[in-house]
Amino acid sequence: MESKEVTNWRDEQALKRLEMITPLLDPDMDEAKRTQMREDIAARNGITTRSLYRYEKSFREGSFNGLRPMNREMRRSVKLPENYEEIVGQAIQLKREVPRRSVRQIIKILESEGWAAPGVLKASTLQRYLYKAGLGKKQMRKYTESRETSSRRFCRPHRMELVQGDIKYGPQIRDKEGKLIKTFLSSMIDDHSRYILQSEFYDNQRTEIVEDTFHKAILKHGSFDCGYLDNGKQYITDRLLKSCGRLGIRLLHAKPRNCEAKGKVEKFHQVVDGFIAEIRVAHVHSVGELNELWKYYLEEEYQREPHKGIKEYYEAMDVDVPAGGISPEQEWNRDTRKLTFIDVGTIAEAFMHHETRQIDKAGCFSFDGRMYEASTALAGAEVEIIYDPLHTEEIEVHYQGIAPIKAKRVRIGSFADKKPPVPIGMTEQLPETSRLLNALEKKYKEDNGLLADAISFAEYGREADTDV
Image (tube, rainbow, N blue to C red):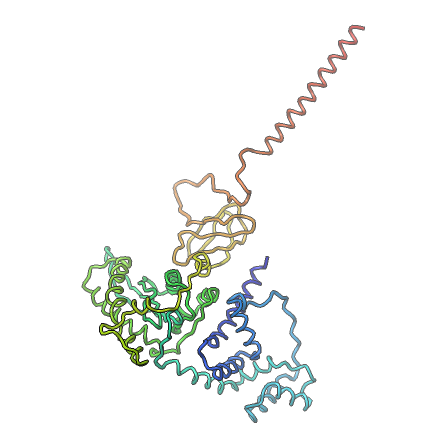
């Protein structure tokens, strides 16, 4: 079994590789543009385009796991020459003289001029130094200009090819005790049909609400090809990227302060504003009540109402639109692309959080400022905890050789529990009796049986002597 350190290192490398290749995975991108973008990404990250080709192929064949590096021991890097700073200075000068010079050509010049022995300079290392010197700015500017076209109006031809997500401030409500509750709406919209895959109010804006939105949307409607999000902290977490990567979903992010790039979800938020205006005159005292009313409003005032954007899309292609228009629900249902559903267990595992904890002498561990009771049998052990971030009343504890334990929050009562539960996995099954006591009983009877035989034989000998 792999150690946790190795596993975490491999996952981190896979996440970095997924971030690099995500812009390159668009199937509709022009190949010339993809080639230029690949060169730019390679230059910024100090790797070769050949490596990017390999990462893309690995992701297509093995999804997220295909990007994890093989479990090899880290090799010691070759020590850099003492004059490496001077070598870098010469490389910078050569690059400025002719910007089109490749790193391979620069190394060839440096070797021919005697700055380094053949084979000492590595292209990837020198490329990183050149990038740090600012020589990658032109490539980055070209990359930025190529991405600006994404802010123009567009519409994917089929459902679940592209999904947009965003968070919006919701109404402030007061509970029955008068406490003010701030709410936030997390939503996901299908780019083609404008159909809302998932939309729900929360009483916080932590990263977990985005994971919950993704989780519920995939459970209800299946997997999608790509997610298009903004750069809010809730959308740029490693956990979200890793969860989607495990399900084969790519994530792209719009440029900061570029609302036009997510025009469909921004347009939808105008519908939300109408709902918020109605809530101001309604008597709502909990987030649960708010979501119940939002469900009705969403279905009747948006999903089943004709959508102007859908009409414009078909008119732009010279396709006749019914007089009554087309609603998001109708456009979603009439699409010919089949939905791809994933096993519920696979989805749940992809969005579960994994952490390690140390079990104390009392069989407990700390999580999110609270104590959870696992088992005294695991005292002193380092365990893995797996949990749903929005449902932490119960946390699953994993340890080698035993069945998973359901740990619950510690409730301090009037008396201590004299019989704490023992994990079933510590023994394959609960014993019906003490095998030690049974063995001692058997040994006792055997010993006493031999002693009785010895006494009988001795008495028989004495009787024989008396007869003589």
